[in-house]
Image (cartoon, rainbow, N blue to C red; front, top):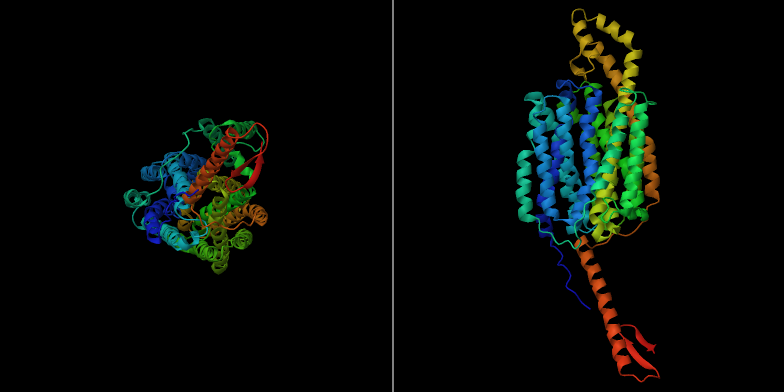
Length: 565
C-alpha cells in the first residue's frame, strides 16, 4: 500500500517559518535579560531586601516551570500556532505591567504572570521546531538561534544597564513591546503547520492544582526557612508535609487521568528519565549562576548595571559558541553523546571554580570560570531536549519536550531559591560576626556615618558602589563570600548530571520531522488494518467455495503460502 507523505519543506520555507518563531523567542529572552543587570537597582529603589530579590526572580521561574507542561499538553490537543501567539500576548502584557510596579509585591505578582507566558514560549518553540525541522538537521539552523541568543543575552543586559543608568529602570519593561507586535504579525503570515488534532481535548485540572501546590509550598519553605521561621518548626512540618502529600496525590492522579499533565509512562524510557535528571542540574547552572553573577558584579565588585552586563559577557560567549559549534557538528556527523559528556565535565569545572570567588579575584580568572560554565550549559541544554524529541512518539511530542523543559525550569527555580536562602543566611552570619568591624569603619566616616548605618540596618538591598570606603570594601567582601557559598550547591548537581549523561542510550538521530513521523506511523497503521482485512476476505472467499473436508490453499499478501482448514 502507498500513501502520500507530507512534502518536505524547502530550506527557504523553513527559514520563513522560523522567522516569527525566532522573533517570539527573542521577545522572551530580551524581556528577561534586559532587567537582569538592573534588578539590584530595581529592588533597592522599591525598598526590597535579599528575600524580595530572590522572589522577584523565583516568581517568574516558578510559574514558568509550572505552566511549561500545561502548554506542552495543550500543544498536543490544540492549534500550536494560536497557542504561541497567546503566550506572547500574556508574556509581554505582564512584562509591561511590571514597569508600573510601586513595590516589590506588585513586581513579584506581574513577574509571576509573565512566567505563565514564558512557559508557553519555552515549550511551544521546542514543539513547533520539531514540527518543521528533524533532529538530525537541527544543527543546520543553530546559527540563527545562536544569533538571536547573542543579541538577546549580550545586548539585553547592556541595553538594560544603559537605560537604568541614563533614563529610568522602568523603561526596561517596555523594550519588548514593538518586537512582540512584530512577532505576532510575522507568525500569522509565515508559520504554516498542521492544526489537525485527532484526540478529544481533556485538561487535567486537578493535576495542575496539585503540581502547583507541591512546587509552591516547597519554594516558599526554602525561601523563608531560617529567616521567617526555624528550619525545624511547625511551619516546616506543614509546608514540607503538604508538598509531599501534594506530590503523592499528583502521581496518583496522573496514573488515572485520561490525558495526564505529565504522562508517567514517559519515565519508562531511559532517554527521557536520564535527560530529566541531567536537565535539573543544567537548570541550576543556567538560572542560578546568571542571577547571582549579576549580583556578584554589582555588590562585590562595585560595577554599575551597564558594567555588570559587560562583565558577564564571557559566560554568554561560552554558551553561544558552544551551542552553535556543537549544533553544526551534530548535524554533520550525527553524533551527540560525546558533546554532552564534555559539556557536563565543563559544567562541573565551572561550578567548582565559581565557588572560589572573592571580591578581589583576578577578573581574567573570573572570565575563564564564567566561560567554562557557559560552554557547559551550551553543549548540554538544547541537546537534552533534542535527544528526547528524537525518541518521543509524535502524539506525545508536546508533553515529552515540555517535560524536559519543565524539569530544567524546576531545577532552576529550586536552585535559585536554595542559593538565595544560602546567600541570605550567609550574609546574616557575616554581618553578625563583622559587626565590630563595620562599626569601626562607620566611625571613620564622621557625619556620614549615621546615614550609612541607617541604610545597612534597614534590610534593604544596598547599592554598594555608592557606599564610601572603607565600608564599601567590607560589604563587597561579605557579598562575595556569601555568593561563592551559594555556588557550592551547583557542584554535586553537575556531577549527577554527568552520571546521568554517561548512561544515556546512544541512539542515532532521525532525519524525519514530527509531522513526517506521524504520517509514517498513520500509514503503517492503515497498512496493517488493510492487510488484516485482505486476509479476512481471502479466508472467507476460500472457505465459502471449499468442500467441508480437505485442504484449501489461501494466498495472504506478502506472506507466501499457508494452510487453512
